[in-house]
Length: 113
Length: 110
Image (cartoon, rainbow over all chains, first blue to last red; front, top):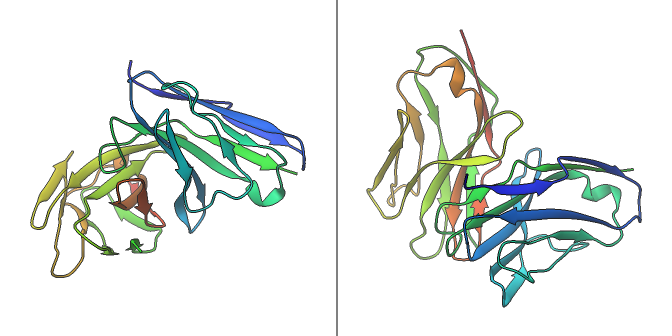
């Protein structure tokens, strides 16, 4: 089954404790992206990757890192989480770019205490 | 820059009622427009899209027409069902990202 898999679904952590949210897709997609969803704000892009060689910042990259060492994986790293990073996070992928159909993961609800 | 403005919710309807969710956009160039739907506890799914002016996207009884003259992409469904209860997002594409509206929560009562 074609899918984007995110882990974990729920995560509670404390300020400053490094964490990684994993994202993997099995559709051989070139494009991957991370979004955060906050009430009243919709989804805002954190980082995107056009392919394994090109990764760049989105609208709200502060406090986040990503890597794209392989085509299928695009982990989101919070080196020192803070309470304002409490949010619902989604990974998404598509064949070539954001102007095509995006496939979304089921989301990761992160709470930073 | 690109932006999307979506009507605020929540919207509560009875089954078989008509649904309209307004969406207007600001963009440079000729973006594609999308409606995504998020069911409770799930990720977003593409509902429909339109790639150029006057295109009509349709799926599962939902329709939206790309109106360049009014910069709008309103979502409509003639007769909603309880299973249509969800959050609906209007979105506009750049090559590197989608710009989303704030989302409209729709609840359909039996």
